[in-house]
Image (cartoon, rainbow, N blue to C red):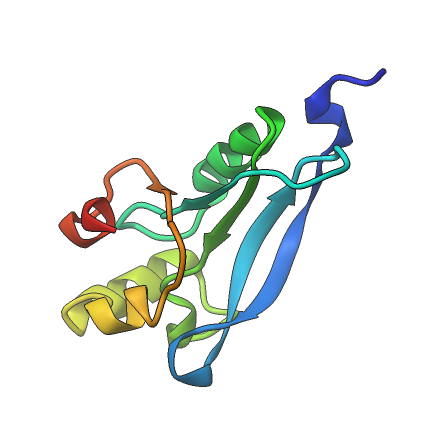
Length: 121
């Protein structure tokens, strides 16, 4: 049997965000059958980048389905991560209602430096 990290399915997906906006996210699904626990990975302030995607993969390698939405996607899906982060910071950051939306169920966010809002969720 292949090690769990060799059976992962990973890639960018489009999801519907707050207000019906389409945003991109990096999703990694554990390769095992059956229901899996999930983790929401929140990227750090500089933006959606390779190290954050690696954190997402590591959760999946431990058996979680993990997703990391690009919180700066509204600055443009094809915009460089550094430019998108700078534009969002110039506007005062991502509003709480846009980040939280109308969530249901339990949510277990993780990231390198979650905001107070993320810790509250």
